[in-house]
Image (tube, rainbow, N blue to C red; front, top):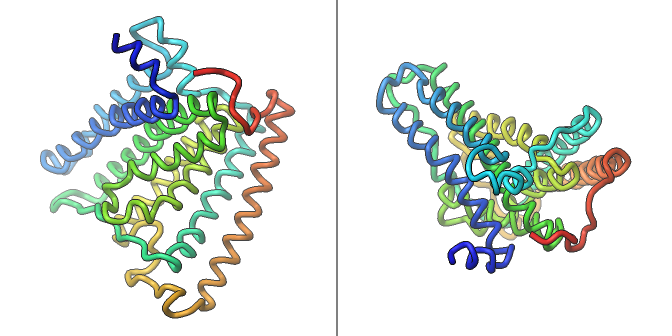
Length: 301
């Protein structure tokens, strides 16, 4: 009965529920382990060991291992953990790095048009916790976030919507859910931050669609989170906040040289990103049949 009702739900509803369930299954245990490590035996990053073991088991399950066997192929398809050739890997990493670089001036320009929120979850290091322990826990947090969020959002969520509604709807819908899922970082400004998160999701989502694999986005996501979390730890500011004092909005103080410089960088990096993704699409088309149509997919989820 419940399975029948579940299958009757539209994919645009069912896929986000599934993706958020995967995200919760991966991140909640790590959050509990991390908190426990901050309270007990602070000198040693012991939480990494059980977290790594759990993450490995979760990945195996999401990729088709385990019970029930009848859902094995569906889970493997949903995860999209597909191996890629070195050429596709190289092109995808270059494209993704350019895309992520473009989100930095985007955040700067957006922050001059609207008031962006401050980070509501600063990294507070417990007294007595050594630097190496903090660093290793931040690295593990980056790995968990990269692996779990790519599996959840670009794998289980975006893939299903792609097959029914095409990549444009899939990437936009996934980006919106991805942004809303980060509401704890800035509860009062979650809607203001949506364009930024949709842009970040488009970088990862575009790679997943063009390569039909979450691996390039997963690697870049981990690297990006290492940068973001380390910066937040050192400066206390999120990636979209470059200075301690919020800049004046252009509507109040006018557009200064910094605004125009960031806008120029956004245009240049945005153009380079479009070129790199186009080159990746051509390479994928020649090597593996290429991306699907931009319209609704023919396969029914």
